[in-house]
Length: 426
Ligand SMILES: *Cc1c(COP(=O)(O)O)cnc(C)c1O
Image (tube, rainbow, N blue to C red):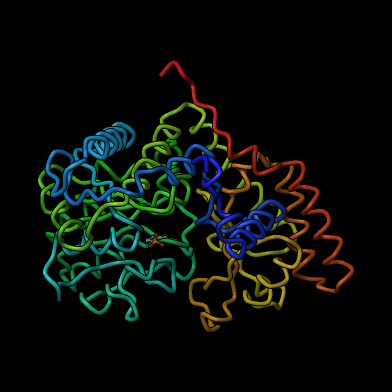
């Protein structure tokens, strides 16, 4: 038998899994992702992700591996590190973290002893689980204290952050959020950290792409350590990285391996390198500018339809919408929106009176839609469809909205975003 006839794709080997994968592709094709943490990775990123590097074990770091056969694993990781340093202008980069949560765990373990005090943003007001939630490793291993946003402005109150820091004397301050629509003032965090003798870590998971594209100030000059995911606005594979000042390089590397992880995912590192190559291209800056313009256009269109935007608007890629004026919970709104083909997530708003399973808010983001090519004109249409589906969830209206979303998806197919053209002159 010829070798080629024994080479089988997923459909031939495992029709059950193939059917699910095809259905998911169809779902992505025919719905719009408004989830602020999602994006559509390019074909190039996905090809690297499915490459033969998944077969390799390469515990250690380039030039210092525990197994043989790592010539190309070394090459790909060194290339990825060099690109991360070029893109973000940092002194050191570790590209091995499997995801954002382990990147944060590695950073904490590199800088602190368990039980140390850390000041981070409250989960209920925009922070992340790994910023000290009691159900997360972070809240179990460290003594977290929290800052939030001001009730009147719904923005971080740096005087409050300073007051809490002076009272609690944290060893580490964590800046960064998962549901905060405004710019974060990293210089202010740095000066507060210096005043109380704390280290500063910035978790830029949500905004790494914006930082790379120059539409959000970079935390790199201010933070001792910066962590981020590669699959959100950065539009790479699922994964994460840690950037740091040279003085923490060895502690960070040891905390990732052997401290927390075993062998790196070399295929994911290859895909991260491709994503960084795309992000170094001038077109990526244009993309990120459009992401922010689309978020502002979507916010304006929703506000004109009577929705209240937390903090009054957005500076970045996401919006937090208060549904209270509509008399609908976040859970209800997210279900209705999905019936119309608009995929969102319910989210707590600051000082929310509802439970996390209900919520008063909806979190919306534009990175994925912008990758498909939707622009400000389409944001107006998306806002109309979203509000219509949420406020008039009768079957006829939901079917009308669903049909319009399908038509939008056909006009802006996944392929349009999946093929990223980079300037070969680089
Ligand atoms: C998404 C996110 C993470 C965690 O990333 P995972 O890859 O889901 O583990 C950490 N911090 C922030 C601020 C995030 O938004």
